[in-house]
Length: 213
Ligand code: KMT
Ligand code: NI
Image (cartoon, rainbow, N blue to C red; front, side, top):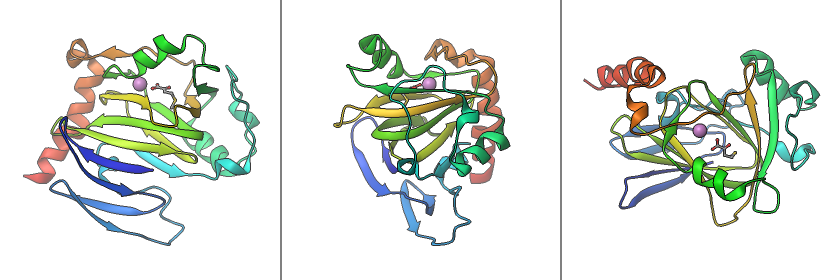
């Protein structure tokens, strides 16, 4: 996973983040690789925004290009099965974002890239290809997360985000959910007053400010 700290005009820094930990200091990143296997969940600017991240070996298993739904109980990857059980993921589907494989490609890609929130967690496990998730940090700047094969990431309810494919123009991903999936995006700015947004600000962004003061 590549984390890019950027504003709307320039890209400041790119750091390759693969099963490692780093800390965030005034928009520059102090970076230290840890070889410890305990470091599967990174302590990072991402976790400070309530984003969780794991690196899995997605290439060791075979997944269909498109399966809507895909039963998460069919997982034979024990790391994925543990995350599924720990977090109660009971629904999954598998999609490939590419003009040849994704029904209504143009409409979907456009809606993925609208800045939005959800009223539930967004969970994505990257099985192939790559793409960009952009999330807003506490200063309302974009933070670009370059996701690649094996990245499993959760975006909390109420975080502003958007998704786009990168130069490879293809991403193969599993989308997990607790219970019946609801993919409804609430776009900015009307989502500013959504309960999920208010809750996220109270629980994470205001806490963040207190830590800094
Ligand atoms: C989303 O919600 O933005 C997507 O599902 C994008 C495709 S999965 C990486
Ligand atoms: Ni979303």
